[in-house]
Image 1 (cartoon, rainbow, N blue to C red):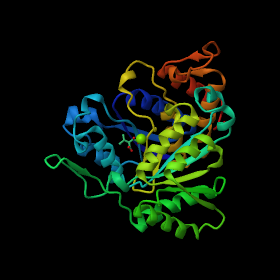
Image 2: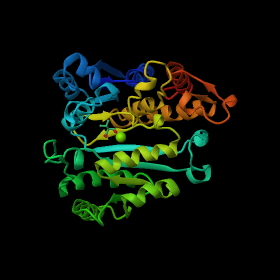
Image 3: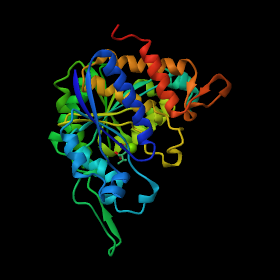
Image 4: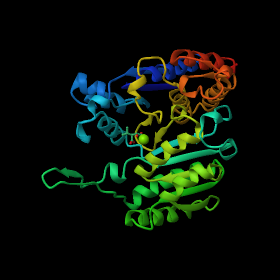
Length: 363
Ligand code: IPM
Ligand code: MG
């Protein structure tokens, strides 16, 4: 299997955590006889500083020429006063738009070993397994018009969707639900917003193609509550862009740490893979970052871009085993710390690699 991966590590903890994901992917390639090549390019704040733009032309060209893009994280406090279109985040939004992936898959599941990390009671989260499908190229993030008219003291953004944009992401969500527990919850605000009424109507239309999947609708405000009170009732959760941004962070509570969550964006020219967490500038460069979100993101590359399901599953099992054995990065070492061995970013990466090796996928 041949795979060309562009690594855009970005800012803050991005480089540290992606290094561990890349090291593991390299071992997977070596042990399975696969030909994975890795190229590195800049994105985000580091690109603003060195290239004067958050998404250099060369990075985009390489991305479009790759089979998969692995992104670390973007953003930093020094850019906080910049307008949205000049900030590190603009580089991320531009690469998302150019690569064309509109379905952002964000799994959130309870790790038994991390139950103590969640403020939710173990009996509420035990067994929860949610796949959030977030529409990534529409809604308020990209809708026109948008502006801040400072003279008038007025600013506006536009939440806009077409039937087609909803239909294509809904279809992917239903297909994924078919392979899981066959339940799809579509999230909207159809009691207030026309754009949500269109969303709901388009989802109902697509549901006719998937009679084996049970569809329910939830308003986003109620959904925010249900995710915390009865997360086990949900399987695939389909949302528009901003609602998905908010609800996927909230789902991190179920897992115990945002640092655990991976994501994959599919449906476009080149799939884009990023952990859900941000650049965490406060802990950058200290070896404190949790690389498991990035490592699990690497597993999604194997699953969705390489078709290496067994190898992807081995990484997921490896991560579980490492947690079972009591290894933790500092963000996960809550509760009775004497039961844990706290590892640095690099040590955790090495521990996962060592554990995945023992699973002998290619033996
Ligand atoms: C995410 C992030 C991004 C988003 C930011 C960094 C632009 O919060 O991936 O969830 O809002 O999509
Ligand atoms: Mg977010």
